[in-house]
Length: 224
Length: 190
Ligand SMILES: [Zn+2]
Image (spheres, each protein chain N blue to C red):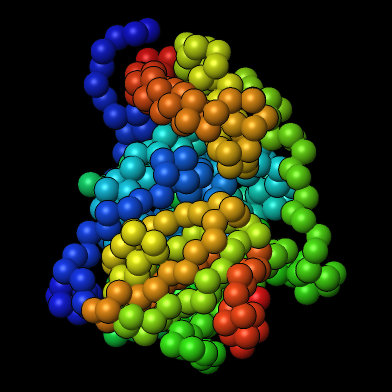
């Protein structure tokens, strides 16, 4: 793919904001699960530096595996395995096409992006996954210059930018950028004027609207 | 014992995977299975899987090695690294399916059950590993055990050990580096 198809609006695809090292280690160990893993995974697809770091941690995981005391397998384990490799492998599900103008995304996200978009006030939402508990994951699209209504979080939030850029206060987040907030933040992210913005977002709980716009719009979007 | 033979630890595992990709080499598969399936099972047992589930996931892991052998790139990762990531991902897939199945039954609220520390310190008789870990300063050893033998995010480890997250991170980092060096040394089979 050419850079032109990857980028829209903002002139860079190399992410400037990354998950913490602790997150990357959790990813490598497998202790980061669910949609938080999906969001970090989406960042890794666009970020050579973080992929390298995860690869290093995985190498340690491989060393651990190698050094583990072997468990006892059942006597028929190997014959069973040899019989299984003779069976034809199940056909792989065809990969969903990457939405035009987006960065590469995990297949689960590409598939979810085909879902019905709920629209309200210059934004759209497509749910990606729900649960366990209050955990939610969704795609948020914002039209150029428009934004999500101001909101607070009752829980943590992770975001990765899949297209365009958004600003949040003085900060600008471009393609591939990752950001994480704890439950204390109140903010009103908004797409930059240069183009539409799409983000993949994981939250540990529902959003809390801080103004009447949000209270009106969030139920429509299904995130309140 | 501490001879400086710079031979790669598991000789030939990468070539075995290549032989599977090239010509469906069943002998190579059998060797890989004998070596890795019991270790993958051990890894899953440590994370609290039942013996049956651990055995089944070990089977699936090696089956995946067979099916995706052509996607293995020895210039990117060691065989053990690749197989570790396959096992890790299959375990996460299984956990996801279980969560989904559980979510279908009771209402939203039930928080994920805290994993009892069935994982930690259960069996630590791996001579090499113990040797490697015993070389670490105790604080690093503790952090590294928690990180790989349990399923806890680092923030939780920090809370439990009553340490700032930054300290846990830097200890993990140091410990990993030392452990890497230690494990890269030839084993005691020489
Ligand atoms: Zn990164």
